[in-house]
Image (cartoon, rainbow, N blue to C red; front, side):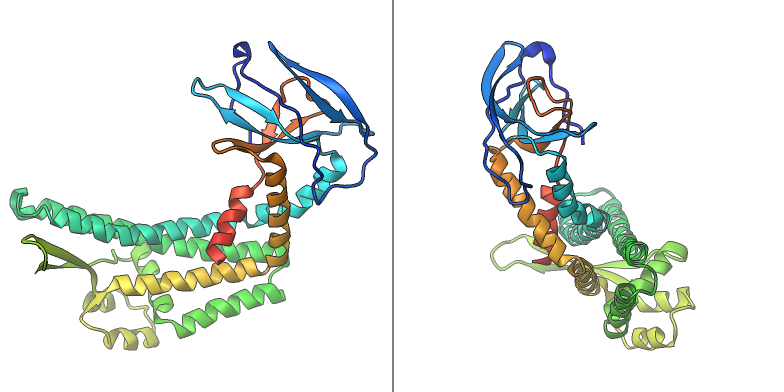
Length: 351
């Protein structure tokens, strides 16, 4: 990831002395301290570098951070000696599992966001219906807008959970091979959820219906109740699918699902089913992460120690500056951001 462009004429780039603390993944090196003047524009800073035996074409990565200034320029801070190629390779091997998990994390986060937005839509719709009395045509435009809003968010939810499942299985087949024990275990878990959770079965079928046959939401059920501590009415929204419409609109439910649907009320409240299904998908995500849990924990350790060494202040962006020599007397031309945030997000989800 490239850093923001600095303004060379503004003398805003500042290089400060590195902290020579050792990182836990560091390889043993022959080290000599050498004083060196770091000069950029009118800024002169004295710091120390370390001398390495270099390999041809070797790149050095300097832990540090940048601070974005109000005028769009940045201050560069280098707060460690450079990592040489051996250390870079060891560090990148440690964190490679994070990049491996990134696509599945993103697919799950899209699903999680779609679930959050379905529940927040209830509050949005309640607010919309609170304006019915003073609206044109008895509030019919608001009612139609509310229905479209929830159809949109429900279809996004249905699409995103299927996308997550497909991405996870594809990732497993490519990395561990189809019909490997890990792939077979993943399939067994999805089958278990399908067999033992009505919500998983129902939402899987509903996704197919919504994509190919009909929209999944039939009506809104809106109850108006008097609040105990106010003269204002309270609008309670339930999201309803008509059982008869579902059964008549699609002939591929299968005998088991048709029997289960026939035992449900005429008007099916979808939100509890959606919320239970979200729990099932989270279980699958956690199972996927469990495959690489040991490597992920080690990557987290390395990244945390790197953050400690960088010790960036609030608002700064921790990075690795990249040069082709072990000196930092000119502004680095490239940088990359280690996956600190990805690890934090994964660990927060799996608890």
